[in-house]
Image 1 (cartoon, rainbow, N blue to C red):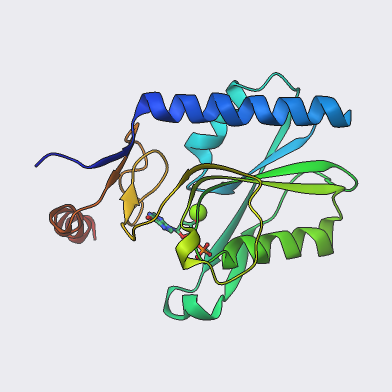
Image 2 (cartoon, rainbow, N blue to C red):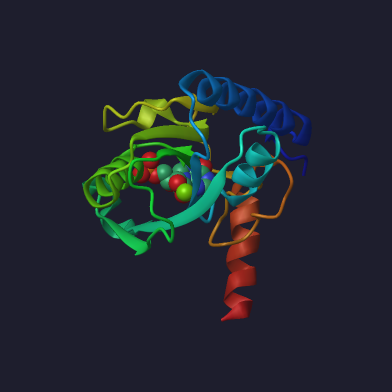
Length: 189
Ligand code: IMP
Ligand code: MG
């Protein structure tokens, strides 16, 4: 079965270069030294690494992890699983996400960081934006690709129950893929 590729390796590379260049230009214009780039674990790791590799600005890196209660995802119940290890007080920070859909996870994160860590500014970068699913008025500063159809994507950090993050491009998970992974997962248990 041929895979429906949403972003090829080349397209990912081009997106990383483009956003990295925009961030460099912005930091240079604003005189920002050592901004802190924060990856939202685990989905953004691949994207964040490729993005910062293209940046000329000297950045610092950190990670944060949240999880949504899947049963109550629509209520926006998000919990913090791993906090930052760096002090970001008064610093410019860039939060890197894989996908933003309802925006509830990112809204929680920005609210939490402002309240508990007091950064100077928060810049939001996301590889994908499912804007049509938005339930918040969240502003995303830099987006790799806008999506207009509700498809479940995997690869390049995006997963189905932790599977497929290592694929170097992003593609649409078909029902046959899901069935296959469910069987694999049953075997692991
Ligand atoms: P939300 O913006 O709070 O609704 O949640 C966004 C999160 O949902 C992302 O960080 C992903 O972890 C997950 N997600 C949304 N769409 C997809 C997808 O197509 N594939 C894999 N994960 C997804
Ligand atoms: Mg995520």
